[in-house]
Amino acid sequence: MTEQDLNKLGSTLWAIADELRGSMNADDFRDYMLSFLFLRYLSSNYEASVEKALDLDYPTLDADDKRTPLSVWYAQNPDDVTEFEKDMRRKVHYVIEPHYLWSSIAELARTQNDELLHTLEEGFKYIEDKSFANAFQGLFSEINLNSEKLGKKYSDRNTKLCTIISKIAVGIAQFSTNNDVLGDAYEYLIGQFASGSGKKAGEFYTPQQISSILSEIVTLDSQDPATGKKTKLDKVLDFACGSGSLLLNIRKQIGAYGIGKIYGQESNITTYNLARMNMLLHGVKDSEFEIHHGDSLLNDWDILNEMNPAKKLEFDAVVANPPFSYRWEPTEALAENFRFKNQGLAPKSAADFAFLLHGLHFLSEQGTMAIILPHGVLFRGGVEERIRTKLLKDGHIDTVIGLPANLFFSTGIPVCILVLKKCKKFDDVLFINASEHFEKGKKQNRLLDENVSKIVETYQYRQEEERYSRRVSLEEIEKNDFNLNISRYVSVAKEEVEIDLESVNAELIEIEKSIGINFNQHNQFLKELGLPLLPI
Figure 1 (spheres, rainbow, N blue to C red):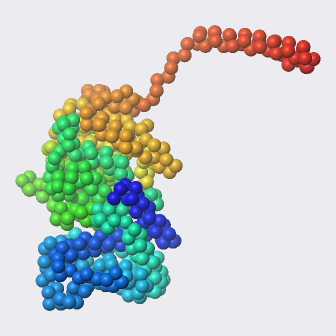
Figure 2 (cartoon, rainbow, N blue to C red):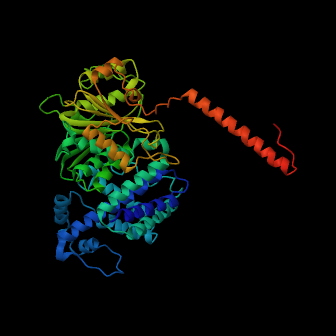
């Protein structure tokens, strides 16, 4: 499918969402829309696998027969169903009974069947509990099909769901049924819903251009980025993964077979479910990723609390877009936690450095970490200054990238990207001031492809350019009291042109003379014509 077709599919689905959500806010309707799109993906993927498995036994139906081929096969082979499902669990890792498949649900919607809502509830529950894949547990827990936002009575809710599902079915039918396309359409819709969610969008969405910068940076060789991309990343972590877009961008950069396993953590239950759906929709098998619902600051994920150094999980790439200046509750116990003990505990007013130190702790010796943070981390004093100083002295801060303002849905403030390493080749710190390189928009600014490429190439080849980038020695940074405010090192202000006052004065005198001559000449013309003269 071409990019034009993909955008058309995305805009078609978005138009459906915009038309049907009515008074429901974008966040609520998003969960219904994306869940139905996910069910469509699961069903399509499963039916394709079933057809391959049954081969010649797969039923062929007439065009006007609205039953699913699988439901016909179940009816014809009742004694073989148990063994068949067992085999499909081995091959596909999940099973969907015929009456819960998207094509069956869409037919109930098309015919305005009164049992649609009940069937959907049962289907979601079946997929979560009995489908087999661990990745499905609790997946639809936040989808309330009995919400009054869909209608006050059962019949109203059922009718609303019939309309939504019918429209989606018709909209998708115009395009390729390739499952990769649905994954891209899902991403498109997440972006559109983020646009309509305002500040809440920061909980689940990192704009694609910024996501591309982080993913391209962490996939480059950590010791010498100029040598190009790594061929393999064993483990990748995003500890504030939102809908998982950043992790998927890394996978796209390095290839589906270039990552051993993807790890993500997300504290918001709805967004956690979005991330799991997003992984599966992009063809990431349930055995290839692990998303945990929990709080990264408390580190409540058991696999990250292993104290045995031989069993400790380390990651070749760590990325994150955590909530900016998040208020948290640092305790004495956390001060002694292995993540913060050596560097210090971030203040109650801003957990930015707590997030950073969490990710850095789990970074491998040969890994790269890229994290999005507010500019305050570069210059704030107190305990943050002490943490920043130690990170610099220990050689962990590799690059500081300043981005333009108003790039995010959730905030208009400019942010920065910090690139960190456990072991880095260069003694200096690279500063990139990209604050003036963007396309201005009505509501939001955006980075163009060339802006993204310039940032990545400057990092990769450690290039220096006036008013854009500069390599700064630790000695110079120390003289500035370890303040990393980007404009101290790379100013975008243009030098004022020195004015020669004598020259300007002489020019003004000449202009004044010229005005006098022209004035007298004009009055002479008026006198000859017998017209009133201009007053002096």
